[in-house]
Length: 260
Image 1 (cartoon, rainbow, N blue to C red):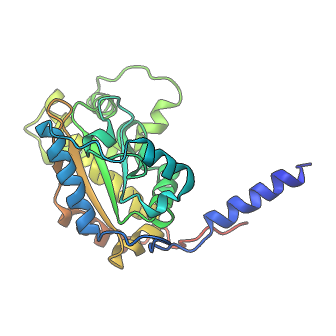
Image 2 (cartoon, rainbow, N blue to C red):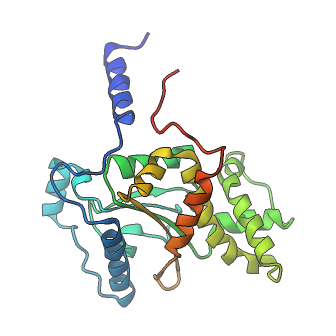
């Protein structure tokens, strides 16, 4: 039998996860979604130019972090690959409590990632989500090789992790019949960003509602590991994906968790 302490902890977690999505900060007014994207773009420009400000990395910020709610500070949620060549806060010249970061191989969006994104948008109160792919992505490369018949044996937990990437690679191959072998990979990386956005919208009604209400924005981007530059993908594509998902009868409909 579980102890009273463990049951209380479970109950408190349940209450947190079932709280209604809100975007308003309890202490500070957040910038608009468009302003947050501009902050990320400006930070990356400084990083590429070698003129990073390294904000919010001093002892004063650490003291704040120990006393204050990250939801009053963070202005972006970023889901990206686990690849060590993608140092998110440095890429955007950001600091402590500035970015809510989710990392997973191949920047895929499955259940755990979608839940983390919902937490970032609805509870950390970030007005923007960036699905950030990167050049030379090993996960997309592995799936591309497998789809083209050049795959190799993988540890048992990796195929279920990266199976979200396969539809993206298949679309890339279909859209670019002139590309073969490794030349498909850059197209697959871009399609995989769009796949992540689609998978999020299909599984997260809460995220869809925040975007439709204008309280949050979802954008795609690709980080070049060789130059440090972030390529921002057309926001119109994210809007198109949302529109298509809203017409898909297989989309998840209940925004809030329901105990069974």
